[in-house]
Length: 155
Image (cartoon, rainbow, N blue to C red; front, side, top):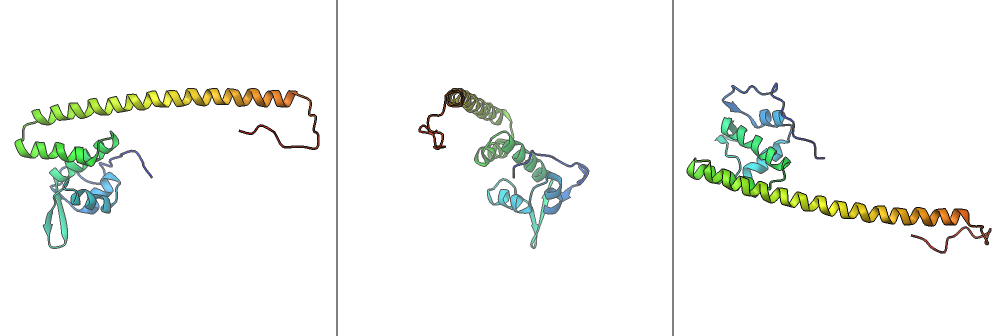
């Protein structure tokens, strides 16, 4: 059940300082379990008040970036690497260079997938043409065995 990322800004006010897990779940249309999973992976670090998680704007922005990264094909490990880089030096130079390298790699992989898809489509078209030609031949030839409905050549 992969649906495109959709943010509902009307459900959570952007000026709000803190958010519950339910607030973020509704805003980003994901489950609370997903949010807890991202926390377990070290991508989010909400404040704790007893059993209650309190998320801040930083967590909200990170969740937005996690979901955008997923949509673009980035792994959670790649996203975590970018977050860690930002947390370490606060400068975006290294982060941007790493991001550009990740983008270049993703684009190369997608181009390879496109090439692979083109090859498969070409092969399917060739097989389809062969099947249609054989079917046309069988339909236009007189049937010597009227009682036999089976074909000697099946695909």
